[in-house]
Length: 217
Image (cartoon, rainbow, N blue to C red):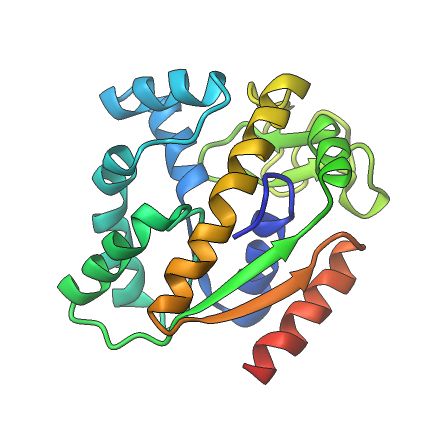
């Protein structure tokens, strides 16, 4: 968990590449549905452009099949964006129970000041290929694409997300601040280990800190 722009997706991608883990990103799933123009995608598109969070019902409609496939094929699964709020924690554990999994769960909280998040998102570029969704930044040397308008991985065009404008970002940060404490409390009540990561520094330093803290858990 973490505010928008905390680097969750970037660190997740590094774990996939370096550890052989897999990641299940509700954000990427949402964007996939939007691109494909599904009924869920149309609803999600309206909500995101309004600067709000996607409802539990829509998340539930997307997540179950994807979660089952992920756990059938990988020992370690990163859930990026779910459960996002306290009301989804019971839903999460119901899904785990329904799949018959005896899973060890850790909640990783990426913590970044709001002013850093705002700067990051106003400079963010995302691959337009729904099967890639790589993230870059024109404000960070380590995240610059080799070509400003093309993805390094698949050469698809890069674009700014529709919700990466100042007013929408500030609204999302307010909502995150209100929900994050309740989310941590709900996880802690289930006995989940909470790992806090200072994600305000360079991405490689964040990754090294993440590895160190996860090894200690």
